[in-house]
Amino acid sequence: MKYVIILALSAGMAGLLYGYDAVSISGAIGFLQELYDLTPAHEGLIVSSIFIGGVVGVGASGFLSDRIGRRKVMMFGALFFFIAGLFAAFTQSPEQLIAARIIGGLGIGLSSSISITYVTECAPAKWRGTLSSMYQFLCIIGIFLTNIINFAIAQSGSHAWGVSTGWRWVLGIGAAPALVLFVFMLLAPESPRFLMQSGKQDQGFKILERINGTEGAREEAKAIEASIKLDQSGSFAELFGPGLRRALMVGIFLAVFNQAVGQNTISFYGPTIFRNAGFGGNSEFLASTMVGGVELVFTVVGMVLIDRAGRKPLMLWGTALMAVFAIAMALTFMFNASGVLVVVFACGFIAAFAFSMGPVTWVMIPELFPTHLRGRASGLCGVFIWGTAWLVGQFTPMMFAGWGGQGMFLFFAALDIIGFLGVRFLVPETKGKRLEEIEEFFRPKK
Image 1 (cartoon, one colour):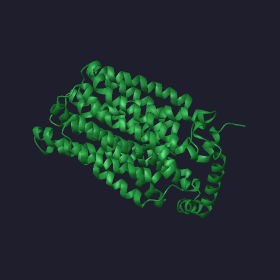
Image 2 (cartoon, one colour; image 1 turned 90 degrees about the horizontal axis):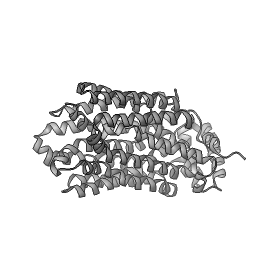
Image 3 (tube, rainbow, N blue to C red; image 1 turned 120 degrees about the vertical axis):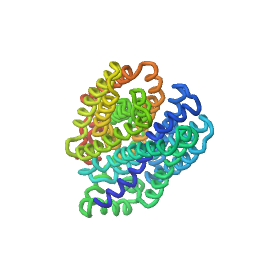
Image 4 (cartoon, rainbow, N blue to C red; image 1 turned 60 degrees about the vertical axis):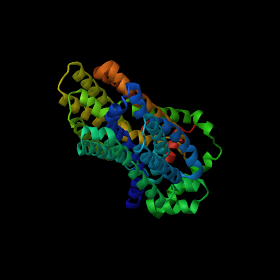
């Protein structure tokens, strides 16, 4: 287990990259808005531009990982993000910053879904949900640490210093975790399932043996080899045929609602929302840090429960509670209630996401697909994650400006209810099943 945990933490550093960048821009965007006199649409483009690169990166990641391996793709992703972090810190115009964020998005897109695929293919079935949740756990650690960094940098100098220089530190520090991910994956082995699929049975078996013990490795290797034989006659078009078409529908649904439930309105624009609720003097950054701390705690709760309670019950409870808290936030804006209530309900909203749609989506998507399609199918679902994230990042400032907090959060409450119904009637349970068992469930019956 120690070995598997090390592998999961190493690959999960891709989540820390995503978490850092998702929130670092929330600490910079207020200063950037003042520096460049941004409109809501332009503000949204700077925030969401990372997802333009992300869509390209995640779309290519699956095809690349099925050719050159999961590990190398994550290393390339880390390099792209390292370059982008340094570039962003030295930009001199909104256009240059957008370009830097697109490059960073390419890096995160390459590494995000593939890191989950990597952990999924390394972890024993009994602990796969918990270990695959490392991505989301480290993502939330990245969000929490970034909120602290945002607050610390905002407190480090005058407001004028923040407008001219502080935001550069906020964005540039992101190069550090990218370098850590690159070094970790340089030292990590390749996925055993990918090695065996590539004809390197001995290397794959040695890694399985370290993970499962000799007897467990023999059973796992037999199941993988049988799966590979069945898969050899397949192609990418198989995803759109009977059986796997349902798996793809479930994967796309989970991908879209991982973002459409609305948590990133708070991750991307938390300080702005809290400022409009009455906070000021950098207390809006402190409020965001509090929300990030709650998200970290409840992500751990989700990791503990995912292999006990199951994937589906967590998602049902999470989407239902998110709808309740979104309505509560809408009412606080509607009646100009205390800003403290906005923070309390935001904490509840984020907590519900953190134990449900947050970790469960990233765990389930790679579980749904056979080995020879897993990288490409996860990448395709990742396109929907990143595409939906782009929509949220781009249009949140415009919704907030046009509809106010009440209209925006009522809109997301409606999406949360749709998410609940989709989980109830579309998503199967995968808890405790070997990947090959899940594959057989979706395979067309002859």
